[in-house]
Length: 191
Image 1 (cartoon, rainbow, N blue to C red):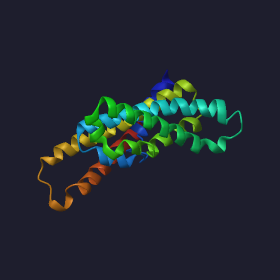
Image 2 (image 1 turned 135 degrees about the vertical axis):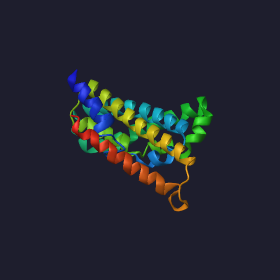
Image 3 (image 1 turned 180 degrees about the vertical axis):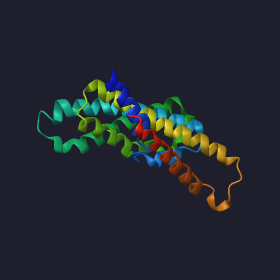
Image 4 (image 1 turned 60 degrees about the vertical axis):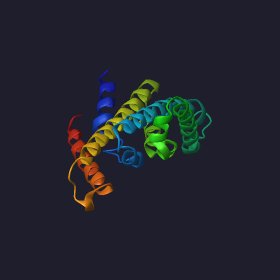
């Protein structure tokens, strides 16, 4: 039980995929302008990350390792992630057209989101069993969502503030992201 707690705290706070490992920055900066879009993207990435963790673990364990074709890992994982993202995109488009429009180009970019591929590869590198793989994937997805929501909340608040013209938009977003990243480094002493 303690191992799972360490995995959760480590993935959400200490090794946050966005704020500590700097993976998934494109959707982090692109979708974090509105809280509703950030929550939607967080849910989509969570779904893809968890299923990608499950399927990549299964493929690695029952196909790549037994046939000694581990060198195909990256290609296999990208294909799995791409298929999952296509599925998520179709579901969101059908059941939530508003969210689909809000996420825009960033939804298909989950396929190339290095955070998803990074977590899938980390699960294999850390030699996790299926249970730890799922917990690790969910935890990183929660950390990604937490970073998105925090950034969206701050950016929405900044819209009503008097910010110098030269700092509006991307510059202030990058400053906020760097401050958030620095703040998350404080969690590194927890475990």
